[in-house]
Length: 264
Image (cartoon, rainbow, N blue to C red; front, side, top):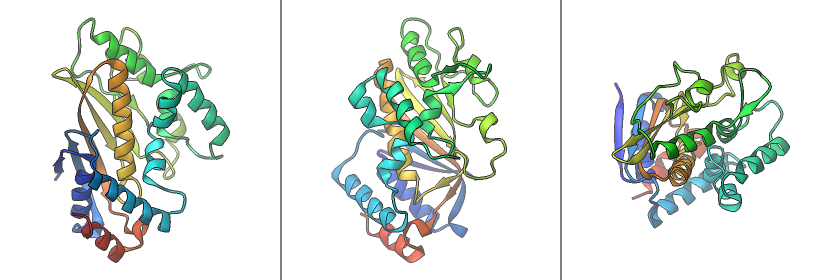
């Protein structure tokens, strides 16, 4: 049975979900859903929680932080520096120099640069999405359209298509990988009452090591798409089809319980 957690902000929603997982058998849950009304709001207490999580991660997962995880979804600092559309090329060039061999890249790279079906040319699904949302303000605005579990992204996002979806799973690259593959499977954008909502679906989600950073990154992506397309932001919904409280990432079960209980 699905578990639905409502929250006004990212951090309290993550904390409630993590505490729920701490009480589950094997610290796992199926179809754990977070629905966050105002994902762009962070107060001082939220920042303190993020700082504490960063400290735990740095002690047990060297090189990992909430911000490094967030930047795999959207390069917010590069966008602020170079603006759209220049930041696209800057990011692709940076990844070409810094990407590890054998890795699959980042979610942001898959959103910004995809190889076309002809195997030769590339296209930018994220930019296409922004332009289609911009155009919807001048013509008919579709609230909910085709899902890319069925429709090919190249055709769904073309000029005469009605898609507002961003798939992250790449069959050509990922079909033979049982592990070391993207956990974020799909991003769906919907216009509701003039506001832009975003829904993210994860096939597997580690709540200690990844989720808080994922939520920050999704918030940054949400802000980018809404700002550039001229929509007010709405709700952020995150579905973890398999959610795990990976206590080793925080130093073990006792350390994780103590950390979660230390927050108000």
